[in-house]
Image (cartoon, rainbow, N blue to C red):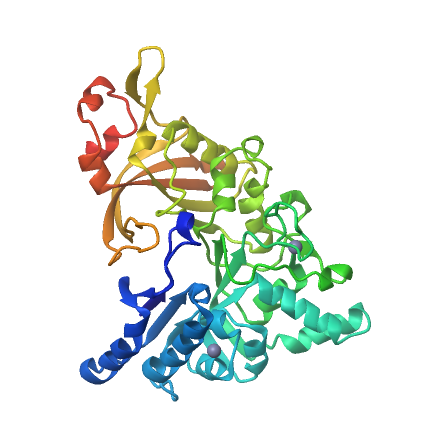
Length: 443
Ligand SMILES: [Zn+2]
Ligand SMILES: [Zn+2]
């Protein structure tokens, strides 16, 4: 079950506060209790999975009430049926009700520090979620409990316990954190994480694979700065120059990167360093992942609902290739899902004043395989939002780059909405441009 405060990035401030989305359907805040009771008594559903998103953006009073309703009506005090509870602590910042449920779930988080402290039991989680803020909180807690570096690391060892293990660790990274004293234009460049905290979690929890989610906004907007006043912890950022990042000796099956809700990282991947202002260094992203979370398999998903590229597919594909091969990778299989607007396939020739179709960037080889996927999205009419978020079908083609000698394989899966291909595309253009990129979507 999904309970979300969806909004349109351009209308965050003016969006009316009196509705949320439950399973992608608009629900008035006054109707939520009735709906939960209906599910509970009439339908008799046993809710196994609950994911909430951005409920902290709701009006405070209703937000707290919703937290309690989710517990009382959907989960129940015993939490008999619940298996997965995601993101509810965003509202309460980690309460007793939530930490009690954490004990019963297979998938849980992101954990606030107070919940982490209750996890003294033995348990193997399928998936645990944490935020970059938790890393800072752990570092600051250990510093506050100690007089020197040695004591601090002893405290760290006592804080992260190996009675907990998780198959997959999901790390939520806030891209737009600011320093408390930063009243000038934020540079969106403050995401230092204490490296030793990350490493000990990966080691002691016996993490097998990872998911990194880059988020353009969360309710943890403020950086902690106390730990930065001590030189105990190594500071890492995913956009730091990669040659300065130490290689971890751990190994992971797979690292999955979600850029679906990213603004800065995504811009860094699709543009060369000199083209972003300020240069944010996100071209260091993949090399840093391979140093901090060594793996032979990385998959990335780019946004499908906003910041979808609109111009020049040829240039975008060629830039992405340059960025992902900036470091020569050995033994890496990299998959990127890339969602684009139909407008990206053509350009206006200024001399002839005619539209022309763009080709495939050099270096890529088209694969026979045809792909498709479904994504929820609907146009957001400003403050009111759509009644329901609908499934859209996206058609994809795979473009491959292979460096056999280095065992490097890169698949760029480019997706265009089926509806845009059918409705917004002038098919006569295809005949005039036989070598175009978009032809392969029709062939
Ligand atoms: Zn709670
Ligand atoms: Zn910072």
